[in-house]
Amino acid sequence: MDQIQIGKFLAKLRKEQGLTQEQLGEKIGVTNKTVSRWETGVYLPPADAMLALGELFNVSVNEILSGKRLTDAEYKKAAEENLTQAIKVSIFSSKDKIEFFKKKWLKEHIAIMLFIGICIMVVLVVGIIIKNIILVSITPMLILVAHAWRNNTMMAYVEHHVYDETGN
Image 1 (cartoon, rainbow, N blue to C red):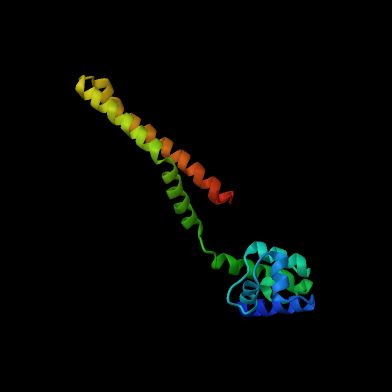
Image 2: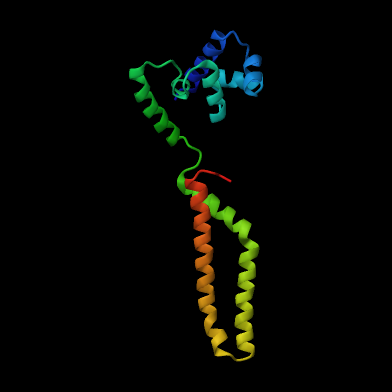
């Protein structure tokens, strides 16, 4: 993807419609400075803006990313190249997303985990104080159960957010 070429293509499409940068910005909800930055290749429009631009100019996102109108023969090849390039420059890899959502889950569930940990410690201390071997001996099992719960619920949360791509 050549940002300069994409920018020139967007400027050409805008001019074909007889729009100023300000008018285009108003139509898709951005400022004229943002449109100028796209057209000069400073940065690319975000995905939602590309969809709006495609609708407005009656071109595909693939054509926008190619920086030109495409024939049917060029379309498939350009689509594959654009997709490959988008994946390569993606901000987050799957590994990054997994780590992000693990940390997010831990932050959201820290109170529950602390409560469970305190409960397990109370069982251990009470078992020691009253010299009850059963309470003392079940503590490692409680730790294993708590760890299994934490791991299963965290991974279900991570998988939902990473692979369902909800991002919420």
